[in-house]
Length: 136
Image (cartoon, rainbow, N blue to C red; front, side, top):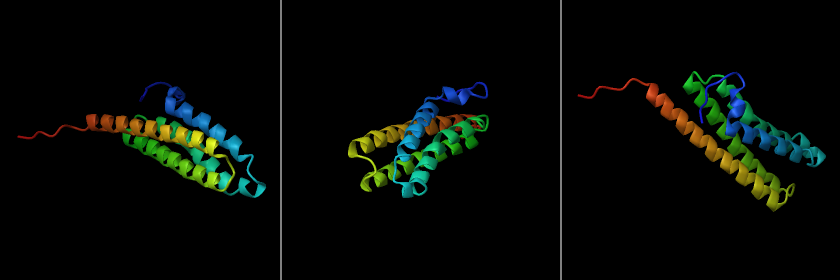
């Protein structure tokens, strides 16, 4: 899951591609909100959704510094959780039907699990870089 490569290597990451695709869906969805919500909850939802692929890409740029990389993926996971909460809120406000909420919420829940797995892999890599203690 953690890949080496050129500057655009983050585009090969499944979590990046999935989060980018979902952020476009969220953006299109929020453009249908009532005018007064475009700049309130709509803006908050767009920023949270867009933050996920941005954090993945920025973290990838620091992939040689595993602790930094992990921090950015943790931030992406936090934004994914934020999107799930905002989706519930817009459903409860009547801006999206239950079916659309369930579909998007499930997609972001899956993405969050993938990000969590990614964090675990990075954590394992960090542990493997630490010198082993000699216990006598």
